[in-house]
Length: 581
Image (cartoon, rainbow, N blue to C red; front, side, top):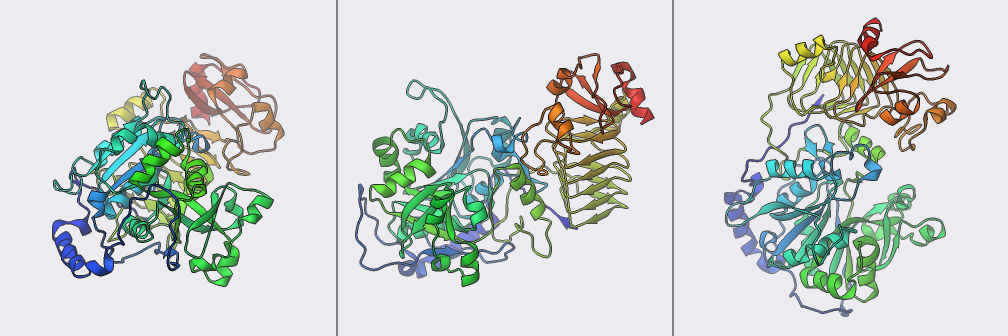
């Protein structure tokens, strides 16, 4: 059993390998090799192509999934902590991750038992000595703001560095009456603030990617190639290539052509010989495309020129600004990365990324790296309590109580409570935001309620269960995604059709479509129950079919009680029905 442990920073956060003593030693070491490490002289070129005397090989970076490597030996001059500003984009409405984004922004979605997605880019920045970080948010940002304020205090990295992680929310003003229209527009609307910082480069990052990367090497490559813009890229197979922006590069690693999510003949036209990236023949044949990671280093004067002068109406970096900069003759360079990277943009990707950390012997992504840990909010929870339980190939978060149950190939989030006889398989449990006291549980029982957690003898397989869900005794959940906080499920079967592939990503189905589709899962919403005749004091029923359940609608909650077919009962009898089940 793998046990996840969050690295919890204090309010003044100094990564272990960035502590003052280590920094002093590194500074001495860097002075000795200054001539070798220093970048070439920087020229403030307004625009256009400058000829190079000799070709340079593309930069190639290939970290391991689990690494005990030493701290980066990169020597940036000036140092990244004073010369680079990190800008993390909070993302759009998160429609592809809905309903996980119904009440939270994409970067605030829980990850790996203890963390949130936003912890990944912030930790990568801190581990790369970048301590001035802005996070741009727009949709459902309350949860994200709360997490960042608790996890990353002001003055990060020590008083001298004057580091910070600051949230910038979308706002309307006389100059900008609209909300953020895209990634480039979000940066443009706060360009007046970013311009005040005396830095050389802006590092543009996404808030919904899972990877570990040393940005100092990325920035060093940008400076050494004298690039205007450097784009992080990775090799990609044909199956996934259509979901990304693809590019072609020359022998110097300079980007010469872009295509945004191409298909058909346009996709084939973007094939390249990826052996130039360092891939062997077999892997190059498997991955014949180069995809943009949506991560950019842009020189400050270039950013101001692009967003204010050349492309004042462009809304997106990937599809408008970067290709436009290439077409005007700017030097747009590729920085090749061949480590683990996942865009957590869909339910399927989110599910697979979380379950991937349980793989053995080496997980897809490891949250533990001595030289580059992943930080998160300090919660001061007790160790998880595992009592007579059978736990295999799983990750258990902090503060869980697990009693005499079976857990296999699953991720169990913070404060999860799993009762006797329960079976959890191939499942992501996000846990709970708080504990219920014994008095709370007793009061709930008197009212016929269900405590937070997984009830006795319940079986959950291949499911995503959001925070604070209440799953009763003897419940069967399969291929299910809980779409609400505080969902309550009484004893019985609860089955859904949406977001499950055969399966995952299937659109929402109506009641009638569910009956006709021969699916074993049901789409349950209050509106659906109301459409079928339910009200605040009645129960909707299904016509004679293969599923013997009725759906009870009460205010915003939907509860499942097994009953005979086509039977109506009142709310007063709901608890009795649950007991009989």
